[in-house]
Amino acid sequence: MRNSHDVGAAASTAGSEELRARHAQVMPAWLTLYYDEPIELVRGEGTRVWDSAGREYLDFFAGILTTISGHAVPELTQVLHGQADRLNHTSSAYLIRPMIELAERMAELAPIDPPVKAFFTPSGSEAIDAALLFVTTLRQSNEVVALRNSYHGRSFAAMSITGQRGWSASSLSPFQVSYTPEPYCFRCPFGLKYPSCDVACAEDLRNVLETTTSGRPAALIAEPIQGVGGIVTPPPEYFKIVKSILDDFEVPLISDEVQTGFGRTGDSFWGIEGYGVRPDAIVVAKGLGNGLAIGGVVAKAELVDSLRANHISTFGGSPLTSSYAAANVDFIVDNDLQGNARRIGRLLWDGLKPLEERTAIVGELRGKGLMLGIELVDPADGRTPNAAAAATVMERARERGLLIGKGGRYGNVLRVTPPLTVSEDDAGRAIEILTAVIGEQQ
Image 1 (tube, one colour):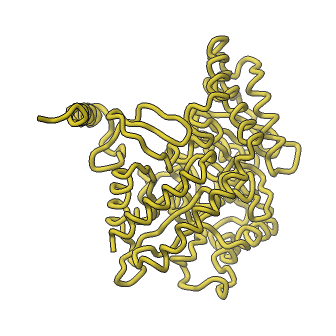
Image 2 (cartoon, rainbow, N blue to C red):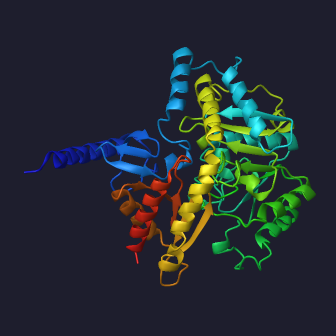
Image 3 (cartoon, rainbow, N blue to C red):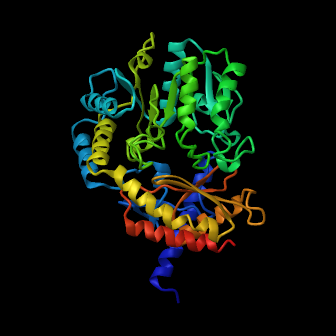
């Protein structure tokens, strides 16, 4: 006879199977689900979440780097409830005090030469679209330079500048796109080694501008760390070299901070700041709303003001999302979550780095702060991407109560990106689990 836990687990499994069948019936076939037996998360608190079977997990993927301050943070939910009790929606056709206050905060925090303005959207993809609209309008050019191995979103325009075939569902594009080499040292596109390479991937931008553009493209857009691309982290000199070349050609720089913003990298509030560079525009989303749907562009005023046609946003910067996002930004700053990302990120790095020497399946640990990637390879040669092992490690980690992500061009990079409120004990538990499950793949 099964005990009550067995009965509950069986009932939950049956419920998950039924929900999965319903998902298959009405959702797109291309909509990815994690795990051989997908789970339904029904509750969260801090760095922990629970599934419909009542199983508890450490959330080290944070809703794809989104719940940056953690789940169900009392200080934030109070703001959300308070605003919901007063007013949910008006549209940008009316003055929205929380949106203006959020824009003022973003302008204050942005590493951009003033005057600075902001425009808010319901998602990161739409924010990318807006940034591209601004620069192409101002510059009167449809040429955009992007990085290979990049990911910028799922909208038509954002997808058209994404430098990964696996995330580009269409070959059509509203832009003339030129791709410059990615700063992927572990798989250098030139077959060179850092630092003797003299950062050739950055230097090649000059050649790209001279040979594949008119010489006056609208902008270069880049992620400070390529998240979906596998936590590809450029050498320290990379963006200074890139910015110097862009300045020679008078080309604006858009920093895609959707994944790297708000202190996640630990050493700076914005990912691009960690390279000593000031962009012309930044794109934000994910962590800005800590789970609520909001994105935005923060840029030089001349870029944001470039439009000469009517423009409005029904949902971007709504009273509900703006008030919550503003409270979330204050929570991040007031509680020095950037400092915690730096401190706990170092602890995770020190705990996971030995895997490179101890296990032949780990090709490289890379990243900054609480944005770390573990590239898994074939132990026979230490180079061939090992997507199967990454999928297995994710499964085994989930069984032990740890949720992580995966990505990379070949699907072989584990993504370790917990909320910035993560504790030392949480980090220690994650190190223990990952060390065990990766070791089992030898």
